[in-house]
Amino acid sequence: MGIFKAYDIRGIVPKDLNEHLAEKIGRAAVVVLKAKSMVVTRDVRITGEQISAAFIRGVLAAGCDVVDTGAGTTPMSYFAVGSMGLDAACMVTASHNPPEYNGFKFSGAGGSPVSFETGLGQMEALVKSGNLPTAAKAGSLVRKDIRAEYRAHLLKFARNLKPKKIAVDATNGAAALYFKYMVEGLPIDLVPLFFEVDGRFPNHEPNPLKAENMRWLQDAVRKHKCDFGVAFDGDGDRAMFTDEAGEIVPPDLMTALFAPWLLRGEPVGSAVAYDLRSSWAVPEEIEAAGGAPVETRVGHSFIKGVLRDKNAVYGGELSGHYYFRDNYCCDSGEIAFFILWSLLSDAARPLGELMKPLKRFHASGEINFEVEEKDAALERLAKSFADGHIYYLDGISVKYPDWHFNVRKSNTEPLLRLTLEAKSAEGLRNNLARVKAVIEND
Image (cartoon, rainbow, N blue to C red; front, side, top):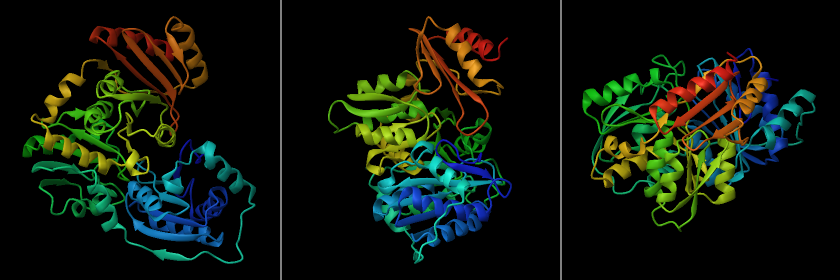
Protein backbone atom coordinates (compact mmCIF):
# COMPACT_ATOMS: atom_id res chain seq x y z
CA MET A 1 0.00 0.00 0.00
CA GLY A 2 3.04 2.24 0.04
CA ILE A 3 2.58 3.60 3.55
CA PHE A 4 3.73 0.40 5.30
CA LYS A 5 7.47 0.94 5.71
CA ALA A 6 10.32 -1.12 7.15
CA TYR A 7 9.58 -0.07 10.73
CA ASP A 8 6.54 2.19 10.74
CA ILE A 9 3.49 3.35 8.79
CA ARG A 10 3.73 6.80 7.25
CA GLY A 11 1.95 8.82 4.55
CA ILE A 12 0.37 12.12 3.55
CA VAL A 13 -3.05 12.92 5.04
CA PRO A 14 -5.59 12.48 3.50
CA LYS A 15 -4.01 11.34 0.20
CA ASP A 16 -2.31 8.24 1.61
CA LEU A 17 -3.82 7.98 5.08
CA ASN A 18 -7.32 8.96 6.21
CA GLU A 19 -9.64 8.22 9.13
CA HIS A 20 -11.26 5.24 7.41
CA LEU A 21 -7.89 3.61 6.79
CA ALA A 22 -6.69 4.50 10.29
CA GLU A 23 -9.66 2.65 11.78
CA LYS A 24 -8.86 -0.41 9.67
CA ILE A 25 -5.25 -0.32 10.79
CA GLY A 26 -6.46 -0.20 14.40
CA ARG A 27 -8.50 -3.36 13.90
CA ALA A 28 -5.64 -5.10 12.14
CA ALA A 29 -3.14 -4.11 14.84
CA VAL A 30 -5.20 -5.84 17.53
CA VAL A 31 -5.15 -9.11 15.58
CA VAL A 32 -1.49 -9.04 14.58
CA LEU A 33 -0.18 -7.93 17.97
CA LYS A 34 -2.61 -10.25 19.80
CA ALA A 35 -3.42 -7.31 22.03
CA LYS A 36 -6.00 -7.20 24.77
CA SER A 37 -4.67 -3.85 26.00
CA MET A 38 -2.98 -1.02 24.10
CA VAL A 39 -1.70 2.44 24.96
CA VAL A 40 -2.16 5.14 22.31
CA THR A 41 -0.19 8.40 22.26
CA ARG A 42 -0.01 11.05 19.55
CA ASP A 43 2.36 13.84 18.63
CA VAL A 44 1.17 17.40 17.97
CA ARG A 45 0.54 17.25 14.23
CA ILE A 46 -2.62 19.02 13.11
CA THR A 47 -4.14 15.70 11.95
CA GLY A 48 -3.11 13.91 15.14
CA GLU A 49 -6.43 14.06 17.00
CA GLN A 50 -8.54 12.85 14.07
CA ILE A 51 -6.18 10.06 13.04
CA SER A 52 -5.70 8.95 16.65
CA ALA A 53 -9.42 8.95 17.35
CA ALA A 54 -10.12 6.87 14.24
CA PHE A 55 -7.38 4.40 15.13
CA ILE A 56 -8.75 4.06 18.66
CA ARG A 57 -12.24 3.37 17.27
CA GLY A 58 -10.79 0.46 15.33
CA VAL A 59 -8.91 -0.92 18.32
CA LEU A 60 -11.99 -0.72 20.55
CA ALA A 61 -14.19 -2.33 17.89
CA ALA A 62 -11.77 -5.26 17.77
CA GLY A 63 -12.30 -5.83 21.50
CA CYS A 64 -9.05 -4.36 22.82
CA ASP A 65 -8.92 -2.00 25.80
CA VAL A 66 -7.20 1.36 25.22
CA VAL A 67 -5.28 3.67 27.51
CA ASP A 68 -5.18 7.05 25.78
CA THR A 69 -2.32 9.20 27.11
CA GLY A 70 -3.12 12.05 24.74
CA ALA A 71 -0.40 14.18 23.19
CA GLY A 72 3.20 13.37 24.03
CA THR A 73 6.54 12.19 22.72
CA THR A 74 7.36 8.82 21.22
CA PRO A 75 9.59 7.97 24.21
CA MET A 76 6.54 8.53 26.43
CA SER A 77 4.75 5.84 24.38
CA TYR A 78 7.58 3.39 25.04
CA PHE A 79 7.59 4.23 28.73
CA ALA A 80 3.82 3.82 28.96
CA VAL A 81 3.66 0.33 27.47
CA GLY A 82 6.66 -0.82 29.48
CA SER A 83 5.68 0.63 32.84
CA MET A 84 1.98 -0.25 32.66
CA GLY A 85 2.56 -3.81 31.49
CA LEU A 86 0.24 -3.52 28.49
CA ASP A 87 0.27 -5.75 25.42
CA ALA A 88 1.06 -3.08 22.84
CA ALA A 89 1.57 0.61 22.13
CA CYS A 90 0.77 2.80 19.16
CA MET A 91 2.39 6.19 18.66
CA VAL A 92 0.51 8.31 16.13
CA THR A 93 3.34 10.21 14.49
CA ALA A 94 5.27 10.85 11.31
CA SER A 95 8.40 11.66 13.31
CA HIS A 96 10.49 14.28 11.49
CA ASN A 97 8.44 14.36 8.27
CA PRO A 98 6.75 17.61 7.11
CA PRO A 99 3.40 18.53 8.69
CA GLU A 100 1.19 17.03 5.97
CA TYR A 101 2.37 13.53 6.99
CA ASN A 102 1.12 11.29 9.75
CA GLY A 103 1.37 7.63 10.63
CA PHE A 104 1.87 4.94 13.28
CA LYS A 105 4.79 3.45 15.16
CA PHE A 106 4.05 0.25 17.09
CA SER A 107 5.60 -1.48 20.08
CA GLY A 108 4.80 -4.83 21.61
CA ALA A 109 4.81 -5.77 25.28
CA GLY A 110 7.69 -4.25 27.20
CA GLY A 111 8.43 -1.84 24.35
CA SER A 112 9.52 -4.63 22.00
CA PRO A 113 9.97 -3.44 18.39
CA VAL A 114 7.51 -4.08 15.57
CA SER A 115 8.95 -4.00 12.05
CA PHE A 116 7.59 -4.98 8.65
CA GLU A 117 8.91 -8.50 9.18
CA THR A 118 7.45 -8.83 12.67
CA GLY A 119 4.01 -7.33 12.21
CA LEU A 120 3.58 -4.41 9.84
CA GLY A 121 3.57 -6.68 6.79
CA GLN A 122 0.81 -8.79 8.35
CA MET A 123 -1.16 -5.65 9.16
CA GLU A 124 -0.88 -4.51 5.56
CA ALA A 125 -2.09 -7.88 4.27
CA LEU A 126 -5.00 -7.91 6.71
CA VAL A 127 -6.09 -4.39 5.79
CA LYS A 128 -5.93 -5.28 2.11
CA SER A 129 -7.99 -8.44 2.65
CA GLY A 130 -10.77 -6.57 4.41
CA ASN A 131 -11.10 -9.51 6.81
CA LEU A 132 -11.10 -7.29 9.87
CA PRO A 133 -12.58 -8.27 13.24
CA THR A 134 -15.52 -6.86 15.13
CA ALA A 135 -15.64 -8.19 18.68
CA ALA A 136 -18.83 -9.24 20.41
CA LYS A 137 -17.83 -6.87 23.20
CA ALA A 138 -16.01 -3.63 22.44
CA GLY A 139 -12.93 -2.68 24.41
CA SER A 140 -12.95 -0.04 27.15
CA LEU A 141 -11.31 3.38 26.91
CA VAL A 142 -9.55 5.24 29.73
CA ARG A 143 -7.53 8.44 29.56
CA LYS A 144 -4.41 8.76 31.69
CA ASP A 145 -1.90 11.53 32.38
CA ILE A 146 1.53 9.91 32.82
CA ARG A 147 3.67 13.06 33.06
CA ALA A 148 4.66 12.64 36.72
CA GLU A 149 5.64 8.99 36.33
CA TYR A 150 7.54 9.75 33.15
CA ARG A 151 9.48 12.62 34.75
CA ALA A 152 10.50 10.34 37.63
CA HIS A 153 11.72 7.77 35.09
CA LEU A 154 13.80 10.32 33.18
CA LEU A 155 15.45 11.63 36.32
CA LYS A 156 16.78 8.15 37.10
CA PHE A 157 19.29 8.80 34.31
CA ALA A 158 20.45 12.13 35.76
CA ARG A 159 23.41 12.16 38.16
CA ASN A 160 24.71 15.08 40.23
CA LEU A 161 23.45 17.75 37.84
CA LYS A 162 25.35 21.00 38.13
CA PRO A 163 24.10 24.40 36.95
CA LYS A 164 24.28 24.74 33.16
CA LYS A 165 22.99 27.21 30.62
CA ILE A 166 21.36 25.12 27.89
CA ALA A 167 19.61 26.16 24.67
CA VAL A 168 16.74 23.86 23.70
CA ASP A 169 14.97 23.86 20.33
CA ALA A 170 11.66 22.08 20.81
CA THR A 171 10.75 22.53 17.11
CA ASN A 172 7.15 23.49 18.03
CA GLY A 173 6.72 19.72 18.41
CA ALA A 174 5.93 17.16 21.07
CA ALA A 175 9.00 17.98 23.15
CA ALA A 176 7.55 21.45 23.70
CA LEU A 177 4.58 19.99 25.58
CA TYR A 178 6.37 18.90 28.73
CA PHE A 179 10.06 19.82 28.56
CA LYS A 180 9.80 22.73 31.00
CA TYR A 181 7.92 20.47 33.39
CA MET A 182 10.60 17.78 33.05
CA VAL A 183 13.38 20.19 34.12
CA GLU A 184 11.36 22.12 36.71
CA GLY A 185 13.39 22.65 39.87
CA LEU A 186 16.65 21.51 38.27
CA PRO A 187 19.74 23.76 38.01
CA ILE A 188 19.17 24.79 34.40
CA ASP A 189 19.34 28.26 32.89
CA LEU A 190 17.05 27.45 29.97
CA VAL A 191 17.25 29.28 26.65
CA PRO A 192 14.03 28.07 24.95
CA LEU A 193 13.47 28.11 21.20
CA PHE A 194 10.14 27.34 19.51
CA PHE A 195 8.30 26.10 22.58
CA GLU A 196 4.93 27.19 21.15
CA VAL A 197 3.19 23.91 20.30
CA ASP A 198 2.16 24.06 16.64
CA GLY A 199 1.74 20.95 14.49
CA ARG A 200 2.36 22.99 11.34
CA PHE A 201 6.00 23.43 12.46
CA PRO A 202 6.01 27.05 11.30
CA ASN A 203 9.63 27.92 12.14
CA HIS A 204 11.49 25.04 10.50
CA GLU A 205 11.06 21.43 9.44
CA PRO A 206 11.08 19.15 12.53
CA ASN A 207 14.22 17.34 11.36
CA PRO A 208 17.39 18.33 13.25
CA LEU A 209 19.48 15.97 11.15
CA LYS A 210 19.40 18.62 8.41
CA ALA A 211 22.02 21.27 9.13
CA GLU A 212 19.78 24.11 7.92
CA ASN A 213 17.31 23.32 10.72
CA MET A 214 20.01 23.67 13.38
CA ARG A 215 21.08 27.27 12.69
CA TRP A 216 18.66 28.88 15.19
CA LEU A 217 19.98 26.65 17.94
CA GLN A 218 23.59 27.34 16.96
CA ASP A 219 22.96 31.08 16.98
CA ALA A 220 21.28 30.90 20.40
CA VAL A 221 24.14 28.88 21.92
CA ARG A 222 26.67 31.45 20.71
CA LYS A 223 24.60 34.51 21.59
CA HIS A 224 23.76 33.37 25.12
CA LYS A 225 27.11 31.63 25.79
CA CYS A 226 25.44 28.31 26.57
CA ASP A 227 27.22 25.19 27.78
CA PHE A 228 25.55 23.19 25.01
CA GLY A 229 22.43 23.05 22.88
CA VAL A 230 19.92 20.36 21.96
CA ALA A 231 17.30 20.17 19.21
CA PHE A 232 14.51 17.58 19.22
CA ASP A 233 12.59 16.29 16.24
CA GLY A 234 8.80 16.39 15.84
CA ASP A 235 8.03 13.48 18.16
CA GLY A 236 10.90 13.92 20.60
CA ASP A 237 12.72 10.64 20.11
CA ARG A 238 15.72 12.12 18.30
CA ALA A 239 18.15 14.64 19.72
CA MET A 240 20.92 16.62 18.00
CA PHE A 241 23.47 18.44 20.12
CA THR A 242 25.85 21.35 19.72
CA ASP A 243 28.88 22.16 21.82
CA GLU A 244 29.48 25.46 23.61
CA ALA A 245 30.71 27.06 20.36
CA GLY A 246 27.53 26.10 18.52
CA GLU A 247 29.29 23.37 16.53
CA ILE A 248 27.06 20.39 15.74
CA VAL A 249 28.20 17.19 17.45
CA PRO A 250 27.86 14.18 15.09
CA PRO A 251 25.51 11.66 16.76
CA ASP A 252 27.88 8.73 16.22
CA LEU A 253 30.59 10.60 18.12
CA MET A 254 28.09 11.31 20.89
CA THR A 255 27.58 7.53 21.08
CA ALA A 256 31.36 7.24 21.48
CA LEU A 257 31.43 9.97 24.14
CA PHE A 258 28.77 8.20 26.21
CA ALA A 259 30.79 4.94 26.40
CA PRO A 260 32.91 5.58 29.53
CA TRP A 261 29.96 7.17 31.32
CA LEU A 262 27.37 4.48 30.61
CA LEU A 263 29.74 1.52 30.92
CA ARG A 264 30.89 2.66 34.36
CA GLY A 265 30.02 -0.09 36.83
CA GLU A 266 28.99 -2.53 34.09
CA PRO A 267 30.77 -5.91 33.69
CA VAL A 268 33.76 -5.92 31.32
CA GLY A 269 32.59 -7.00 27.87
CA SER A 270 29.10 -5.53 28.18
CA ALA A 271 27.61 -4.96 24.75
CA VAL A 272 27.03 -1.55 23.15
CA ALA A 273 25.23 -1.30 19.79
CA TYR A 274 26.04 1.17 17.03
CA ASP A 275 24.77 1.39 13.47
CA LEU A 276 27.04 0.52 10.56
CA ARG A 277 27.23 4.13 9.31
CA SER A 278 29.17 5.14 12.42
CA SER A 279 32.74 6.34 12.69
CA TRP A 280 35.51 3.88 13.50
CA ALA A 281 35.95 6.01 16.64
CA VAL A 282 32.75 4.48 18.06
CA PRO A 283 33.85 0.83 18.40
CA GLU A 284 37.31 2.01 19.43
CA GLU A 285 35.93 4.09 22.31
CA ILE A 286 33.53 1.33 23.38
CA GLU A 287 36.40 -1.16 23.57
CA ALA A 288 38.62 1.34 25.41
CA ALA A 289 35.85 1.71 28.02
CA GLY A 290 35.68 -2.06 28.52
CA GLY A 291 32.64 -2.69 26.36
CA ALA A 292 31.98 -4.98 23.41
CA PRO A 293 30.88 -3.06 20.28
CA VAL A 294 28.09 -4.66 18.24
CA GLU A 295 27.49 -3.31 14.72
CA THR A 296 23.83 -3.24 13.62
CA ARG A 297 21.75 -2.38 10.60
CA VAL A 298 19.91 0.93 10.48
CA GLY A 299 16.46 1.37 12.03
CA HIS A 300 14.90 1.50 15.49
CA SER A 301 13.27 -1.94 15.32
CA PHE A 302 16.58 -3.57 14.39
CA ILE A 303 18.78 -1.87 16.97
CA LYS A 304 16.21 -2.48 19.72
CA GLY A 305 16.30 -6.15 18.82
CA VAL A 306 20.08 -6.18 19.23
CA LEU A 307 19.83 -4.47 22.62
CA ARG A 308 17.43 -7.15 23.77
CA ASP A 309 19.34 -10.09 22.29
CA LYS A 310 22.72 -8.93 23.62
CA ASN A 311 21.47 -7.24 26.81
CA ALA A 312 23.38 -4.21 25.53
CA VAL A 313 23.78 -1.27 27.91
CA TYR A 314 22.93 1.28 25.23
CA GLY A 315 23.12 1.96 21.52
CA GLY A 316 23.32 4.89 19.12
CA GLU A 317 22.55 5.72 15.51
CA LEU A 318 23.92 8.31 13.13
CA SER A 319 20.36 9.66 12.87
CA GLY A 320 20.39 10.96 16.45
CA HIS A 321 18.56 8.06 18.10
CA TYR A 322 19.97 6.85 21.43
CA TYR A 323 18.74 3.60 22.98
CA PHE A 324 19.01 2.48 26.60
CA ARG A 325 18.67 -0.94 28.21
CA ASP A 326 17.10 0.63 31.29
CA ASN A 327 14.54 2.39 29.11
CA TYR A 328 12.93 -0.84 27.92
CA CYS A 329 15.70 -1.01 25.26
CA CYS A 330 14.02 1.95 23.55
CA ASP A 331 15.28 5.29 22.27
CA SER A 332 14.86 8.63 23.99
CA GLY A 333 16.25 12.01 23.03
CA GLU A 334 15.23 13.23 26.47
CA ILE A 335 17.33 10.60 28.26
CA ALA A 336 20.29 11.41 26.00
CA PHE A 337 19.89 15.04 27.08
CA PHE A 338 20.02 14.15 30.78
CA ILE A 339 23.02 11.88 30.27
CA LEU A 340 24.98 14.60 28.47
CA TRP A 341 24.10 17.12 31.18
CA SER A 342 25.25 14.63 33.83
CA LEU A 343 28.46 13.84 31.94
CA LEU A 344 29.32 17.53 31.58
CA SER A 345 28.54 18.10 35.25
CA ASP A 346 31.20 15.51 36.06
CA ALA A 347 33.75 16.66 33.49
CA ALA A 348 36.39 19.32 34.04
CA ARG A 349 36.31 20.37 30.39
CA PRO A 350 33.63 21.73 28.03
CA LEU A 351 31.94 19.56 25.43
CA GLY A 352 34.01 20.92 22.54
CA GLU A 353 37.23 19.82 24.21
CA LEU A 354 35.82 16.40 25.03
CA MET A 355 34.94 15.90 21.36
CA LYS A 356 38.35 16.81 19.93
CA PRO A 357 40.05 13.41 20.41
CA LEU A 358 36.99 11.66 18.96
CA LYS A 359 37.26 13.59 15.69
CA ARG A 360 40.30 11.60 14.58
CA PHE A 361 38.83 10.40 11.28
CA HIS A 362 37.38 12.28 8.31
CA ALA A 363 33.72 11.57 7.59
CA SER A 364 31.44 12.46 4.69
CA GLY A 365 28.21 12.48 6.65
CA GLU A 366 25.20 10.88 4.97
CA ILE A 367 24.89 11.76 1.26
CA ASN A 368 21.70 10.99 -0.68
CA PHE A 369 21.45 9.92 -4.32
CA GLU A 370 18.34 9.65 -6.46
CA VAL A 371 19.03 6.52 -8.48
CA GLU A 372 16.54 4.76 -10.76
CA GLU A 373 18.15 1.31 -10.66
CA LYS A 374 19.24 0.95 -7.04
CA ASP A 375 20.09 -2.75 -7.19
CA ALA A 376 22.21 -2.20 -10.28
CA ALA A 377 24.12 0.54 -8.46
CA LEU A 378 24.82 -1.80 -5.54
CA GLU A 379 26.06 -4.47 -7.95
CA ARG A 380 28.40 -1.96 -9.60
CA LEU A 381 29.82 -1.06 -6.21
CA ALA A 382 30.44 -4.72 -5.37
CA LYS A 383 32.37 -5.20 -8.61
CA SER A 384 34.29 -1.94 -8.43
CA PHE A 385 35.45 -2.48 -4.85
CA ALA A 386 35.82 -6.25 -4.88
CA ASP A 387 39.32 -5.97 -3.41
CA GLY A 388 37.89 -4.65 -0.13
CA HIS A 389 36.15 -6.54 2.67
CA ILE A 390 32.50 -6.60 1.56
CA TYR A 391 29.50 -7.51 3.69
CA TYR A 392 25.75 -7.01 3.38
CA LEU A 393 24.34 -6.34 6.85
CA ASP A 394 22.38 -3.38 5.45
CA GLY A 395 22.96 -2.49 1.81
CA ILE A 396 26.62 -2.89 0.94
CA SER A 397 29.51 -2.12 3.30
CA VAL A 398 33.13 -2.14 2.17
CA LYS A 399 36.16 -1.83 4.45
CA TYR A 400 39.78 -1.11 3.64
CA PRO A 401 42.64 -0.55 6.12
CA ASP A 402 42.42 3.24 5.77
CA TRP A 403 38.81 3.91 4.70
CA HIS A 404 35.33 2.37 4.61
CA PHE A 405 31.88 3.10 3.25
CA ASN A 406 28.27 1.95 3.32
CA VAL A 407 25.57 2.42 0.68
CA ARG A 408 22.03 1.37 1.50
CA LYS A 409 18.51 1.89 0.30
CA SER A 410 16.52 4.37 2.38
CA ASN A 411 13.70 2.76 4.38
CA THR A 412 11.60 5.92 4.19
CA GLU A 413 12.47 7.65 0.89
CA PRO A 414 13.31 6.66 -2.74
CA LEU A 415 17.04 7.18 -2.26
CA LEU A 416 20.41 5.52 -1.91
CA ARG A 417 22.35 6.77 1.12
CA LEU A 418 26.14 6.86 1.27
CA THR A 419 28.41 7.29 4.30
CA LEU A 420 32.18 7.19 3.91
CA GLU A 421 35.06 7.71 6.32
CA ALA A 422 38.83 7.80 5.88
CA LYS A 423 41.92 8.24 8.01
CA SER A 424 42.98 11.35 6.05
CA ALA A 425 41.25 14.29 4.40
CA GLU A 426 42.85 13.33 1.09
CA GLY A 427 41.59 9.77 1.45
CA LEU A 428 38.07 11.06 2.11
CA ARG A 429 38.16 13.36 -0.91
CA ASN A 430 39.61 10.82 -3.36
CA ASN A 431 37.57 7.81 -2.31
CA LEU A 432 34.35 9.80 -2.09
CA ALA A 433 34.83 10.81 -5.72
CA ARG A 434 35.43 7.18 -6.69
CA VAL A 435 32.31 5.87 -4.95
CA LYS A 436 30.11 8.69 -6.25
CA ALA A 437 31.23 7.97 -9.81
CA VAL A 438 30.22 4.32 -9.48
CA ILE A 439 26.82 5.12 -7.93
CA GLU A 440 26.05 7.69 -10.62
CA ASN A 441 27.47 5.41 -13.31
CA ASP A 442 29.71 8.18 -14.65
